[in-house]
Amino acid sequence: MISRDPSVLLLTVCLFAGVLGRGDAAAQGTPPRSGGAYGDLVTFYKDFRAFQKPKLVNGVPDYTAAAMAAQAKALEGYKQRLAAIDPSGWPIAQQVDYQIVRAEVSSLDFDHRVMQPWAKNPGYYVTFFTEESDQPKREGPFAEGAIELWSYKQPLSAPDAAAVEAGLKAIPGLLAQAKGNLTGNGRDLWVWGTKSLKTQSTELGDFAKTAPANLKASVEAAVRATNELVAWLDTQAPSKTGPSGIGIENYNWYLKNVQLVPLDWEQEYALHVNELGRARALLAMEEIRNAKLPMQQPISNAEEYDQRHAAALTEYMAFLKDNQILTVKAYMEPALRARLGKFSPGPRHFFAQVDSRDPEIMRTHDYHWFDKAWMVQEPPASPIRRDVRLHNIDNTRTEGLATGWEELMMQAGMLDARPRSRELVYMLVAQRAARALGELFMVANLMDIEQAAAFASANVPRGWFDLQTGLIRGEQYLYLGQPGYGTSYLTGKWIIDALIAEKKQELGDKFRMQAFMDEFNAKGLIPASLIRWEMTGKKTPELEKMLK
Image 1: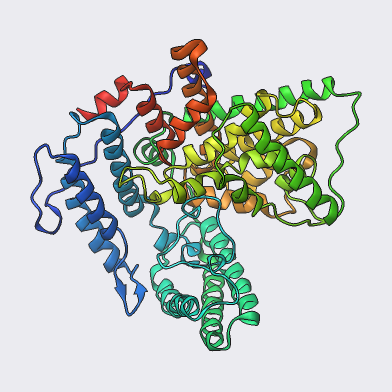
Image 2: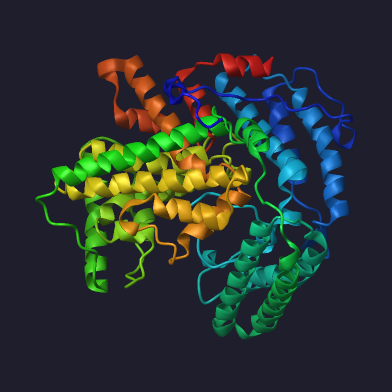
């Protein structure tokens, strides 16, 4: 099965967009429409976005079996209502919006049919976060009502303290409910989800030391509730013996209908095997080319860290501007400079190994912060694209571009003065490929988390993807609970590379990277395959077939 000819990967990117299954009754008594206008889609979208949130009972989101069964039943009406809207005569941009909405509806449908994170993944009930995610929506499935502590200025103002307290007060009820909701038998999700709750307990405990006096009781209650759930989960863990992967058939459906990725499991496997081999082979050639040059040494102290990271960011922004690669806006550099981080003596996880040798490389992956700034400063005109996408369905765009940008900037000449840094870029590609293969093995139930982590570690050169740092297992846990995330980095890169090639072929000498990126960014944070459709104006045969 996994020996399919990888030459299929050289085909032009295609979009598979399946049609939602029809339900039996319209949602909330709304009759199905025939045809419909774009305004109907926007109305549906607003209705669906409100519907997909769990109902609140005494301020606590309700994920009980009865509540989820009721939502799943009502979802059939929404599926029917959306299927009754025919976008085929609309402008391409509006047809793309339809597919965005369809993917979000499909993602909720998949949650009910397959994932059921509220029943299978204890980590779903983590709702206290001290650090900002670089994604528009925090990676992974989580319950409603997150407390994003990082987003509040310290010390907390009275209104902010009240908002935090409201979130804290929901935690005991939510975690008490979780004991009845969690019935899954997947061992990896159970064990690693429990570890996520242990982390929440630690972070709540740290917050308790500095929280305003009027919040301490609520923080302490949240800590107790978290610890009580952890203790219960630990007692149940020995009985959890089943696999946690969703299986290849379900994975293929998810890629096609939610991620809107034009590959199946076998093709993803071929792509990532090829990328791992390419990265390791080119790394070997770079090492030969650079053999007479000294090896790069990691940053050794805080002063060096601050100086080199600041200089790297300045150089990077100048490179983008001077080479007309990207239209540089005033808010972009501050968005990156605010996240340069601080020196840590180690042990260094994989990305710190890269960052401590050439800080400019990871600034390219920090394109994420450009994305988040753009969403605030220059949101898309579409009322649908202005919102953050559910279920990270935009990760082929967000992670795909950030990953592809590393190698694109290298090829554009950013590292010409530092040949050894080219080695680091291929290390990054190898790491993304190895851990994505771990995801593919896990979803197919060919490996558990420990085996996938060991596989990824063994296949990244130089021993930098060290099992001792904790990063690798945490990533594999995320990919097990959020299928398609681990593969999105290189799959998205592949789609975007193909789009660049196609636009270059179309425009010839008139192609300008800055103009391309201006148009690309203006499409918003949506699946990369939809951006490709909108920018080329080409509806693939596969998409045509699906929309009939």
